[in-house]
Length: 109
Image (cartoon, rainbow, N blue to C red; front, top):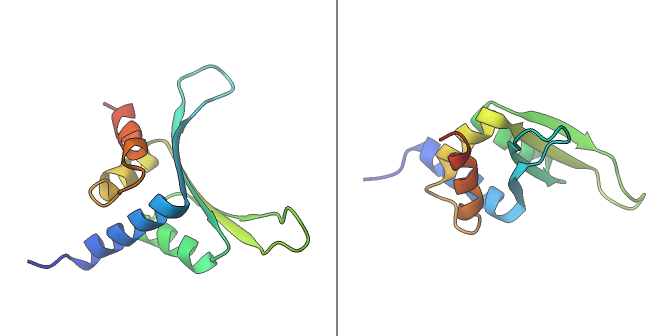
């Protein structure tokens, strides 16, 4: 039985998150419990747009160059329950950061 196109897209997204993603429960300044957070930053706008279009959540930002010779980069950021929903979809395909995805999934249990 073959995978659906959506499953293949989630597997590809999991690979991006494994390699380039930042997944955490981020601390807050006001001492409340942290927030689930997923971020990907890279110079490929096409990949960032792919993630945004696939999951239909989050925000896309253009990042300032840190040095004049650096390339322009983009960041996709997803927080709270939206991050939880993404974690649910990619968990079966994540390899390296499975523990981080599990922390996000455990946050709302």
